[in-house]
Image 1 (cartoon, rainbow, N blue to C red):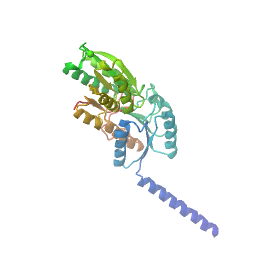
Image 2 (tube, protein in one colour):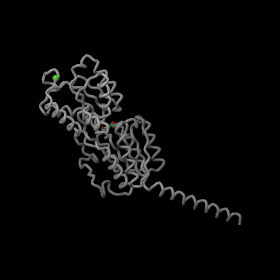
Image 3 (cartoon, helix red, strand yellow):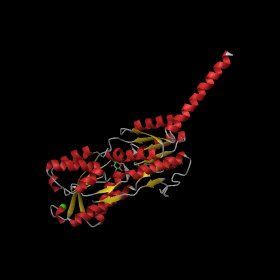
Image 4 (cartoon, helix red, strand yellow):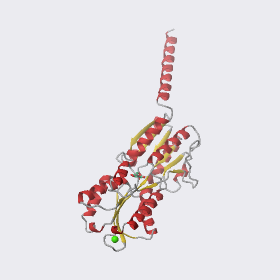
Length: 332
Ligand code: BGC
Ligand code: CA
């Protein structure tokens, strides 16, 4: 008798447990996504991409957790392990180090968890092939440099006075993003190639890179350049992103200098600065679109569907397994 009461008791406890578990599953909204952002200090990732990820997850009733990898790949690797142990259905990873994709992909593969890498495209050739459930969402990095270079070239031709020393050469300084990051590498190279491609001679007075693409770096670096031996010679300032350009603008204002300056991202603040005539141009990096694509893909693959099923996104057919959201030039 006693025994059967006990087993009934156990059965009831188990049943209640099961109900509360399934209730938890449905109230937290179906698909669970574990996401990392390489550094919450990043203007673009934190200001544009993260809010859009949350918005689209909510629209899809998905439960999304976003963690800050604090610019440490080792920390991010641990975060991926924790997500996997918790049993998330999809991983969305903004790598800290684009060269470290293999470790993360291998973890996802071992757990058979679909993985969407975004914003930092893996740099190791062939690494996307080691797992059938890994995809990339980002941009065509070169495009942003080309668009930026084209607008700089057009403005240079329209403003004869920008050639301060009248030597027919554009003396520029370059604020570069994270070395090894495909966006930073391509922007730095392609912007200059496209300016030259418009028949303009250029001279690089200085180039410095910041792994965190930060406003502080833009400010400190520009301040140092302005007081350096070549400070007076600078004719154009080119930044790989708006964040660094904002800092450079502050440094110029403090020094009482105004020079043509260009960024990438088209953050709200950049559009405002362009309106005020303090910035000359930027290139829209459609972070909202990229976040939208990440969530659309996550919903599909969690349901076992083809990644782009029922969406307008197109996967590249070049083996990169990438969705590339277009850039748009912005000058007003
Ligand atoms: C953005 C930068 C950002 C970087 C982070 C780039 O696509 O343009 O603003 O810092 O991504 O990985
Ligand atoms: Ca010149």
